[in-house]
Image (tube, rainbow, N blue to C red; front, side, top):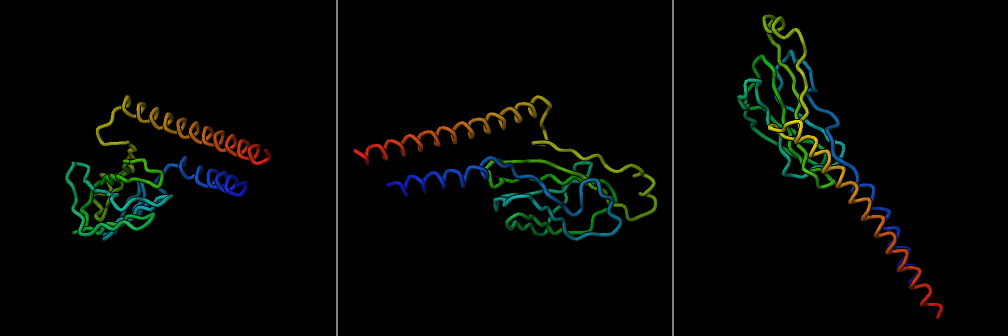
Length: 181
């Protein structure tokens, strides 16, 4: 009986840290704010944890025109998209939607520019400004609500873990005391 209680405690501590971690973008090709001077055929996004197969991303021109992808692959921590045709000069926004290892849906975006002609270099004298949102129509109030929900979720998770530990310890002591009688 003692071995079962110890095993339960070990399992409880083993799975707790991963439940509290949030998935984020670790790297991308092209990178946020990067100016590409040559044609590229693929875009790659790498995350810091495994992502669900249903995760997606889209590429839109700054004007809002969506760029079609010939292929979209999700494998463990990485999403790769193959472009249907070369990108024209301009600024592009990559918006990704994932469900990370922690089960939380996350949506954010970043931008990069393509400059293959000398005329466009003069037009884009400043690098594009990166945007990070939880969704494309979010307002500052919605961002605060999202942050509060995330904080509340973390507090609930920590409280649940502590409660489970107290129950496990109480059960262990009760079983040990019962075994002595």
